[in-house]
Length: 372
Image (cartoon, rainbow, N blue to C red; front, side):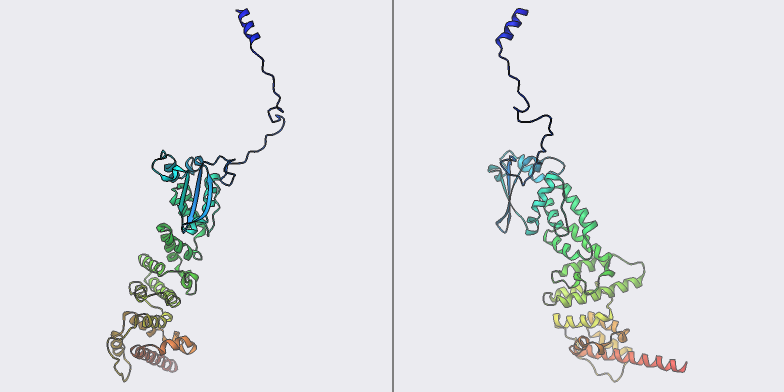
């Protein structure tokens, strides 16, 4: 037994021992840090096995050499690519040349590198400018974790009254109903903070649909006190008046009627009354139903008669002016004077009666004060 073992050992050539230096490394030194796999690496060195071509308007916006294992495996995987890579090269045409050509909106295309960074490293570089583009990519490529994270960032950090207009516009572009609803809810909750000159009112990019949605949502939120409801309606009338004034070249008569309907604006603020009546005259070419009758004096019946021949918006506006004529100091505003000059005679007569009524009431109060 021992002779056989000896003969076997003698017949087998011995391998020479190799030093660490021969194998290209020194065990006494810390090995160099390997570069993390990334889509930005040279495709040959990183053994890239897939290419993504992003198109905008049919033209190449960017080409990215990626790795199937990163896109389709792990807690940040894309279900879109999972289906693509597991299709057995039969269902999808791009499997033939390992290339996906994908058309995206420009806002999404510019954030695609950030999307890949998230897939490869988990790091999310997100801002007000990029959040909706990333959220759209998360939906398109079915990345649940990114979809969830973008929603949290937008709703709890980035979405404010100052950014509401931008988010509403982009949510319409991407048909994102959840963000669109979040914008409307925010505006209704903070409606008192929005002034008539706020960007969400005067910005040319703001569409009438945003304000239609805000007005509809405001109806659903009923204040605890009735006087609060009146106050909110009057405040909204000022916002709508300035929105329509700054957008009068693009807004149509039907939209104006929707925005100023009694359902949306049951109460008109006295400062919005004249601008709204003027806009109605311009956009709808409003004519009275009857010719104004000549009145020898003022009384409530005369005012009621004249208002019965005016439009619903004119009636609400005139009612507001009736009790607050002294607040609207026409003599100090050339714009208001111009609005009055261009009103239809029927409305002018109602304004005259209102002014006369207020003058009578003021005279009575002065006389009473003198007697006291």
